[in-house]
Length: 209
Image (cartoon, rainbow, N blue to C red; front, top):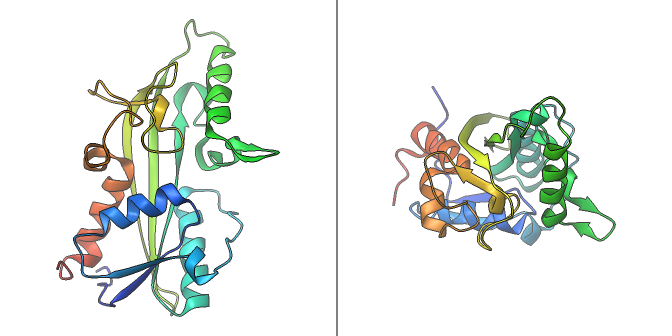
């Protein structure tokens, strides 16, 4: 059985402002005080894992150990079938430029890669967002969950909402990209919401305000 979360305060172990906002919004129904890693001056550990879950766990454990409080960490990315699952766990790295992370650059990079795929005319454009959420306690206990949302990639980019690769991701059965959706609509179907609902069912069921 998963460990129940019963503490009044939770660290959101992320330095990504977009993720901080989404996770904070998902947590609004709980009577839990949340604080971001930046606010506590926590370092951002190197993501050396080879899966989304391993990266989420190392970030959550690092924050919980240093701060002495439970910590929730996310690791997520876009997996494109025609690119053999890339960029996957390296989704943020694909956005790295000399001037910092630039996801417009990363989305152009994906489109160029799809245009260069051999043997497929046009290249298959199916993809999925994957999100791992790990909740860690200072004693080293961790609970982890993984969510997914299937879709296809569009071009050109559509919408200014969301963050990351949202403007090119069209969820299966939808007619708006994540970049065009209002936050509530995206949260209802997103990979992060899928993982979060699993986390809630396992660890937060008795902590609803």
